[in-house]
Length: 581
Image (tube, rainbow, N blue to C red; front, side, top):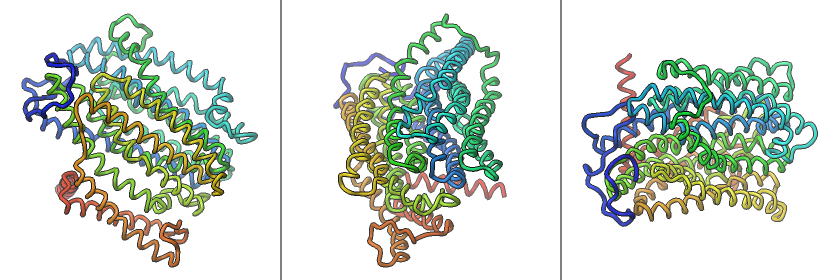
């Protein structure tokens, strides 16, 4: 049972009839109680807006991250120093994802927002202070252990590194760990802000972190070699982490007046947070482990493999974050606050799930086609300059092609997991996440290290095998999630004809840019790398814009609902700008 509605009518809610529009309502959000409940259609529109707000914040943050990656590619290239920094840099990234997106969201936010919903702001403030005190203790221990155990951590995350490369990675890891402590506190700020529905600040704060690193590269790249610049960049990351935390504090103090950090577990609310903390930590840790497995295997593929994999990851994770994370983040509280009978809740969840899946598919299908057919244009536009040359572009594109295997499954899987969380079931997603990690490890080893020499192909293609193997594992996880959820609430499927139209529109949109590449490289095979095709960033930008506009136009002609929403938002933005002018 979800929420605080009437008790269930039966123990199973599969094979039930869909509810009428006014049967299921969404309970009001924690600090915005209303006299009359909203209808489900109103709730859908409201949370589409919430998803757009979250996506906007994530987009700004990811764009800042891409700028950082572009500058790193320019000044560090894809050699030893870049590999060392990218391997060490995974640690603060892991802690930010682990605490921010996972653990605190699952344990702190529900309890804190629940107190706000009851009007008990004083107890909510005490809870926030207690969590801050415990995090201060936890972060101090993490930083100390991280600095002391850096050599062993490097052996785990990049066991293939040796000699100077390994020593540099250890040094950078030690420098970066204090910044990881600041990122833990930044996740605490995110929990408070999200509970008060202040999504934008919490998701845009990482922009400051990325800009601090960009400024470090700009200021110190002259008269310093790549190794020295990597060290300066690590210090810049620590400064940026502190700024990311500091920029959120004024709004946190405004919302949680009189907050005081303290180490205590006297209150029931505090005990509830830490009771839920451990399973959430394990579950999120399993997900993060998958990324470390890939980095560990990539460390055996020679210089440039880890950094090239990281550059590719910055691109293919973008649509997952923008659409999978944004839609799931907006849907989770809505699903969690559903009230009614078991049958009514099942119908409500199916409706929200179907709506979210269709929105995800509208954006992820063209993303898959773009990475497959036009990935070299994207990499060229973002990274190719300075020490990052055409050969690096082709290598990163090959890795992106491997990521196409599971991009759709990974993104939809987030929404399925959120549905389980809304049903207060965290064990099922954890179980299937473990299956995915085991498969990723086994298939990754096979595809990256065994098959290339066995087939006599370039060992560098093993990096593409890593993303392809992760994609296969992602589809297995998605299948398990969907099958289990079907048994709980009934089947939710795409409209096949609509999905077919999405693929037709995406492939047709990519045809013109692809034809241009073939025309420029006359005589090249259809699926060649087209190494001489596009050397102008402006040309790459124009070709990608043509692809995107063609896709939107075709989906609008095919009467895809989400296309009308995109065009409607674009028209509203244009009217707003004209009004201001």
